[in-house]
Length: 385
Image 1 (cartoon, rainbow, N blue to C red):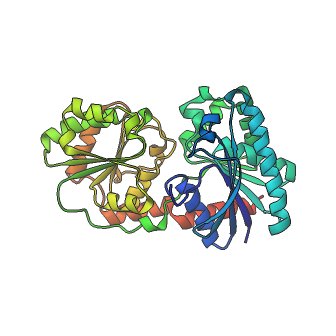
Image 2: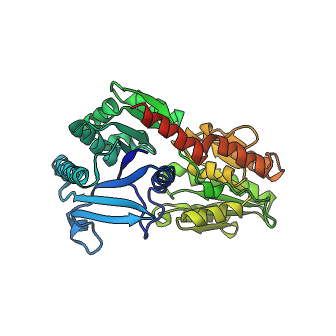
């Protein structure tokens, strides 16, 4: 049994069960395996206006329990963006004080396991160095790939410290490891690829549903998800199959031009848009669909694709990075980015039944992304520190 302190700025709440759900599910799996798990959430965000507003984050420390896991959130608002480094230092000092108190009350953690460099990883690397506690870090969807220009020189130095200090630096895909290591001048101790795990609740493969052919896409409404490509392919596919339906689910619909694109492509009547789904709703929508798709320009992993396979549903995705580690022959199709014709052709092949049976898809997925496999891999990493 290991005492593990997970450090992540992403973690679910009762009001937002989707945020950081993959961090929770890994933490819960470790807890179920007999390890003692707590979570530290360092939160550096906001502005003076947001802080003073009714809904803004207030500075301080809050402790709660989320589904049997203790969560300690430490908030440091950024009142003035030009002083971000100053507020980062204040956040670190609060986290350091918290961890000293935590050790006095609960004993010393055997492992710090951080998720996402900003802010969990950069805070964890300093805590690890100052208190001499081994650090494992997992990098997920990284802004270093999607928007590297947002980071300051100080941010990049902090990331380099994390890369050099983590005893084991884990990436969720080969694509993520290659891209981030190329753009970061650091002396890495040890790196490995360990994918996100698929929760056991998804491994209940059901027969292909009856009714109209239904295509599901789960992901934030944002440019990198490239809904325009999907809707262009859908324009052709739905012209051949007018009974087919496309379901889109995700956050921030109002912030994109998806609704305008629906009108321009003339497909509004066959497409439905939904808000972000909680974990139970994700499963329900997947098993009610015939195929799950991703049209992204870039994906560091693509968890919904793996979850669909666990449910026994085939997938179609652009070759956007992470999906290449997920889709095997018989699982569906990996198509070139920005090629609507190839995407349409892949949908047609799924419509014609060119994929393996649901139980085969599910078992193959379990062998690569199942909870037991990922926990075993983490335990081996922890044991080697």
